Length: 444
Image (tube, rainbow, N blue to C red; front, side, top):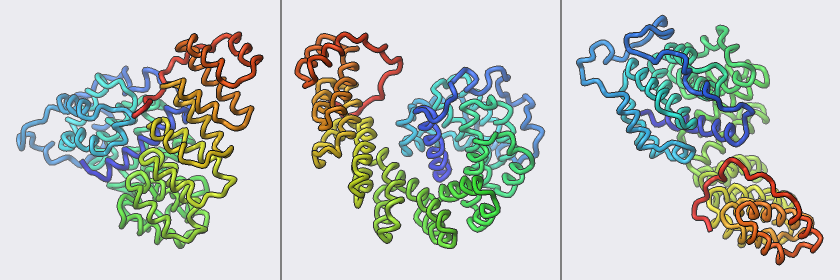
């Protein structure tokens, strides 16, 4: 399994899934978000759209006797067991490599068999996205046109799976054969993606194109309109997967207009921070002070997912006083989602002034899902009177849904006025949320 493609695919799918599942998309998941259920399952002997397209055969396709045929269904089952799926597995490249490496030797017919097995057995949306993107991407390395034809036939158009997987496959095709992928996209197929997805498709095409020929990618990006060029530059930055490729893009970006150069560097900083936080921080700190601020924002935001402590450090380092309340709030809220205890310890070490009020509220809101009593203490520490009352009210409402007697008892010592306490107790409790709160590691 190609490590660089796995990293690119994991980053792309993780980014898409974060945006989708946390509210980045207004679409709702329906049964059509799987490989289309009304299509017949792929069969080695069945003719599909992909069979009408010229292809570069895998050497094993010509003579299956060269080695025993792997059991695609069994390999899919083992990959699911090894990986486990979900956002946690998606962010762990070691687990991904271990899970998907056995699938790397499948030929075209076996890839179709594996995809059919995924259609039948995989229901978890994030897991399905990763399986389809990687298997179709593997196919696209040797026959991008056939892989795209399969994706267009089998993925429900406009579904979550289609929106995430098809651009990823197009990017893999562009990586192995950029000229063919670019011609395909411009031969009327760009309209298949719709306005929003055209930008996503351009991003992935230029990621593959830049990995193949950086100069060609930069020249083509310069010829596009402003919106398309922005998507292309993001893709070019995303192609940097090691120090050499990063430095090459950084050096070549020096000749771009200032706003384009800044965009490329910010994207490089963001992706670098995900794979090598310490390396990204070292590079940012080596730059002139006036160039560091936007890069700290880009890299720090990503680091909050992979190394919250370092992310908090780089975000706050050199920050203006007026920006610190916003940054404290961002760090506390995101870090608490991953490790509420560590986030709480970090908060206690910060200056305990009013600039921390937003962070206290955000932290308390997350902590309330695990330990409402501790969360109420944090809410009471908010210094602004109105914000403190709002935070205590929020914690009380969460707590009352779980244990009304304990919540009411705690309200007596909350510091709220007697009138407000009486008003809260008389208010009808809000409906309990249907979705469970995100899991918290190392919680109270």
